[in-house]
Image (cartoon, rainbow, N blue to C red; front, side, top):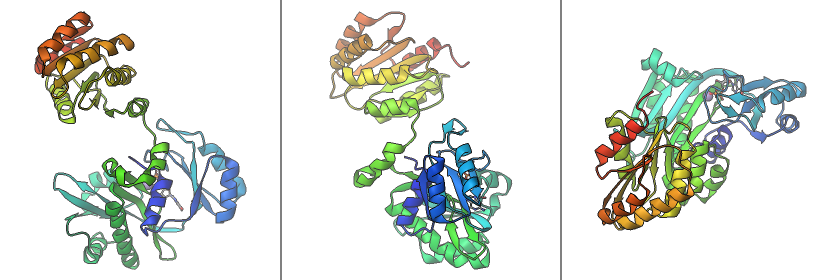
Length: 382
Ligand code: GDP
Ligand code: MN
């Protein structure tokens, strides 16, 4: 789950990562009220979960109430790459001497935490990585050992941050690492981390991705879930209690079990298709869940065929088939569908599916063959 900048900053603050004081507003009046309290100049910042807000005109400095009001009016309602600005964060503006970059993330390949620090912040880090890869200093951290003061000192020195910024920057890194680990995040990124003209170091931006698998020990995350921006497909899927990830292909996928759903994505790719989503309906395949899954998938206009891949384990084939048949009666599906049913009592299940078979609903016992049919019916890559 991604946090908005203002939530990320509040999260940072809990772990002692320094941020500027500020507040959230939804109207120009509220912006002015906040600004008066904070003292000018202030910066008015669009709260959308997409980078490059500065370039898009979503971040503006205001020296007085009139400017604050005008900027608020222009930023609220603005569309930044498909994200409409509903809220702005207002904070006391910083006098920037230098902009750095700092992040901690998981390096799944190396099974380690990865710290990245650069003296070239403020611009997109992908750009720095492309133009001047040596300007980013990387350090792998063994999660069982943790991140030490010595490592923090080494990072800020190797990244060649300005001498005067190094001690505070190292402290920021230590706090940020605590935020990353104790805060159960998959990513904490500060770009820019600034050195101010009066020699202080603090986070001017915050990008935090929380590890959803840790949500059970963070009841306080519910407020983030409530404000999170999901695309329409993801919103519906969450409501239906499905494990869903939107992708950009054209074959809708429904499978039971995360492993099978992944393999299904793989075989669709293997036969020349592209999955429109990953969807795991879990162990069973009740009519309720299947109908929910079909609804989510058919609301996706890029889906040109659907591949249902179910392996009966504890849930028996006939129950699965009955679930599919009932769901089909409830959901209006406009694209062809291929069902592969295997596992416990698959024969009985396929017998039941026969009652709904048509040009639009095809049953195929073989996973590879079923994938091929689904891709063909979608008309292949366009
Ligand atoms: P992003 O464009 O979405 O990454 O948004 P950021 O929060 O990183 O802001 C973009 C840029 O706006 C920063 O790199 C700064 O140059 C500028 N900016 C943001 N806050 C302030 C501030 O308090 N004072 C000044 N002078 N510039 C700021
Ligand atoms: Mn930024």
